[in-house]
Image 1 (cartoon, rainbow, N blue to C red):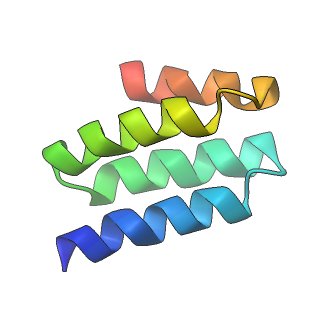
Image 2 (cartoon, rainbow, N blue to C red):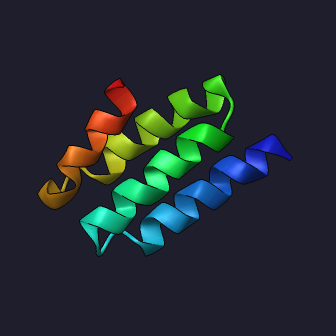
Image 3 (cartoon, helix red, strand yellow):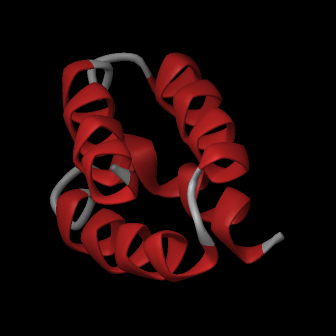
Length: 65
């Protein structure tokens, strides 16, 4: 079940990546719902996903907090 939440989170983040503010809001929300090991996986995925999207770079601040 928990793995499904991580995949769901990735799907949502992909769909809202057009809006930086919404993307950050969804990312922040997902960090409260995922398990610690899933957050680590999400960090890795996020770094890869926003590599070519400079407008989403500020979202990395949520992961460092």
